[in-house]
Amino acid sequence: MARAGSIVRPDVDRRERALVRDAQRGSAVAFEQLFRHHWPRAYRAALLVVGDAAAAEDIAQESFLAAVRALDRFDRRRPFGPWLHRIVVNRAIDWSRARSLRRELAADHVPEPQVLERDAPEDARALAAGLAGLAPEHRAVIVLRYLLDYTPGEIAEILDVPRGTVNSRLRRGLDRLESSLREELS
Amino acid sequence: MSERTVRRLLDATPVDQAVEVRAWAIVQAAHAAREPVPRRPHTRAGLMLAAVTVAIAAAALSPPGRAVVHAVRKSIGIAGAQPALFQLPAPGRVLVSGPGGTWVVAADGSKRRLGDFREAAWSPHALYVVASSQTTLAALEPSGKEHWTLERRDIRFPRWGGGRADTRIAYLTAGRLHVVAGDGTGDAGANAQPAAALVAPAWRPPTTPGHVLAYVTTRGRVVVLDTDRRSIAWISHGYAGPQSLAWSPDAKTLVLAAARTVVFFDPASGARARSRSPAFAQLPSPPPAGSPCSAGTPCCSWPAHGCGRSSPLGPPSLGSPGRRTAAGCSPACPPPTSGSFSSAPAHAAYWRFRTCTSSSAGCPRLTAGPLAPSLSGGSRPRRRGGRQMKTALAASSVLPT
Image (cartoon, rainbow over all chains, first blue to last red; front, side, top):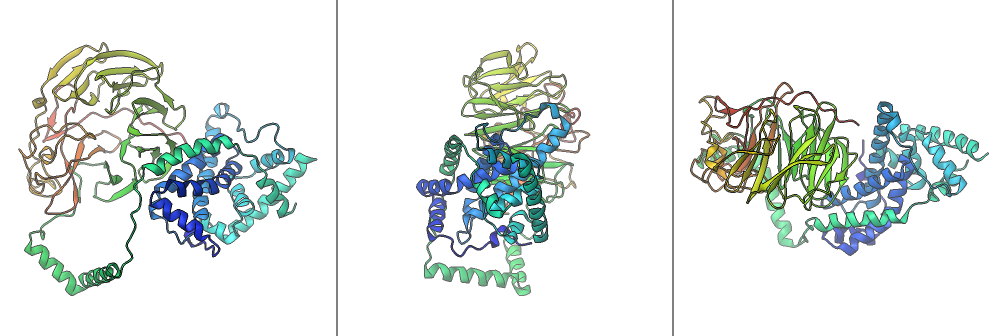
């Protein structure tokens, strides 16, 4: 199974490569630019997969910290985004699975997740509710495909699953999401 | 529902800008704390050197090349050298931390690196590991699988304590003591308690219910804290140069090792039972000849004290450096790191290891040797075949997931 490192983006900015190089060499300015560029999507991806704002904050933050720890080994010829998103999404899936287990053990102690404020747009709340009804793995493939714009092949590399599994999860996930959204918005 | 609709909805998910501000503060600190990668000169000389190195390595790996390597080893006396570590002197695994990271070493000498953690400790029944870098506290399995992490600044001395089904982890950050549950929840800084010195806190063994922790304040005073009630049981007088704390397995004695004294406390009252000079903790006799760790074999330099000096990462070395230098471990060893040892669940053979690099072998080795204060059922170490044993911790602690 190919690793996320083989995702090729010919259009990867030379500028991003330079930012990564400078960040590796200790440039705080370069690193901040990388952070500002990638944080919003990384956090949003974590939020949509775990459905919990506090957990998403921890996951996105920890993913960036993991990226900092591994920065020395990062190959600048690869795009930074897929590498980071792999960390974010896998951690988000792990968290969601673990949370399911904690809920089984002590359901009365698990607080309800708060994804969105009550004054959020109706369709955004409907989307959140629809995603909450999916398994973490299905949420992850939908987020990777439609929020982060990865191809099914790239998603297979990021999640380390067969491409057929990605395609079937996308189909099932979209079907359930669609019916859920119809119910919520009707 | 079109894919376009899904994209639009996903992109429109509102996010809190304050989250980014908080995250940047922590991530920025982590980036600033790391060692920057130096510029690599891409010169013709560098490329030629790399080519020559590759050629030499290729020659060395060929059968004639290996013969040359063996001949060289034989001529300079490394022919009889053992591997860096091939066998531990007791059943179980060793957890070793140092500037290069944290490893779990199995009884057969195989090693698994857990990550760039500079400190680590076993859970009470050695099922899990708590490890820390400067900004990350992590709970892991010995296989390296991560269960949870917390991001904080300047983390030091993670320690895991507790009983069968309810554990706690204590750690320090910049003079503050923290206690978090074994599943990473409920992290609470002990703001109301005296500031903590850079001495590892010590959990009381779970002989009685509750989570009681001993730590040292910046004024050298020992504090025994009931972390469940968040109340202080007692505080001692101050001692100069505190270095480490330890409980006896039966929790009837608490020991502080300081620069010039070793102090024994009655944990119930905080009364000082006795004090001893550092000479109290005598060095053990070498293991029997013929055992894997006989004196003279590099895998076990005995005793380890002769290899180093006191280190901020571990208890002080008792005995003069170089006074009892064992074979395979030169007096010029670099400052040791500390490790802890865990055996099978039935009982824990409690060791503290030093890593020691011998200039002749050129590789780091684990050497075994007890370090004071090291208690076994009472205030004086009980020896058995040259080894010190601690009685087992009761029951198991389960890490909720």
